[in-house]
Length: 232
Picture (tube, rainbow, N blue to C red):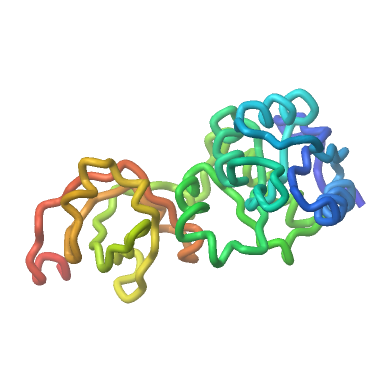
């Protein structure tokens, strides 16, 4: 059963499968084929530079399915999230998959989440989700961004600060749920001033339904608010 239509503006015939686990790559290969694509399993490595892997992908395919943790067997020195984000910059649609999404989302994945339109847990990756995911990526790359992905200048409050992460509350998204993000997303000049209760502005896709879909970029320091102002 072919799910992908070649009538879409993006002429996608071949899709690269990037996974350091050969067995999982072969499973993805079958699902991609059922979705209507000609799969190309990326082999080789170790890849030390993202650009080297991108060159191989772009020379052999028009889209990609990338596992997130690529370093277990020495396949690559960078994450699948970084690879997908770089492909996004180059207008190449790519889906990120991971069986560790719940663990990695607050740090290594969220660091690139604004350039990852589709993140699938491995157990939900099949022909239908691949076809829908590539269509979703293509739509965003063509400028048709879904409401759940559109950024808005939004106030947030820092709740807790860790060694590598900060936990924040976004009152206009959910005032009762903290969201974790990596410190590296913030400009270095901001990090020395951070403390619990500090307010910042950032571009955030507050239309997201799940915390795992949220991304943060373009941070600004915000004037301190009293409790009445924050609740207003």
